[in-house]
Length: 130
Image (tube, rainbow, N blue to C red; front, side, top):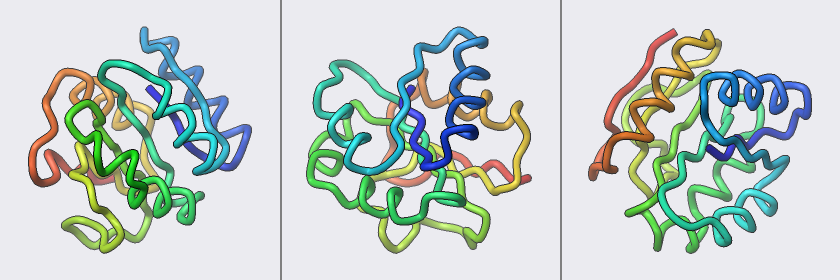
């Protein structure tokens, strides 16, 4: 799991939560770091973008050619506080899940667990409401 958020404390807290649940977790503070890690990782990767606190990073990652060209192995989860439904206008890749913010830890764990097991579909797989 790659957790992308520009707030170090938030990133560390959710990385610890996911690691405690058995996931191998990488962290990125911004889009540049996230894209560099995505390009070097092999196999399936669940990418959690905190659009609620890092909207610019989320838009950059979702629109990046490295992500658009590799959707078969990427499961992208978007956390967003103002998401009204459907794909965000900047999303050029299918989203595995959308989590409304604020959310609780169980919602994140459930979305990551599902995303790690499922293939990406052509449209959002699930929406988790707060």
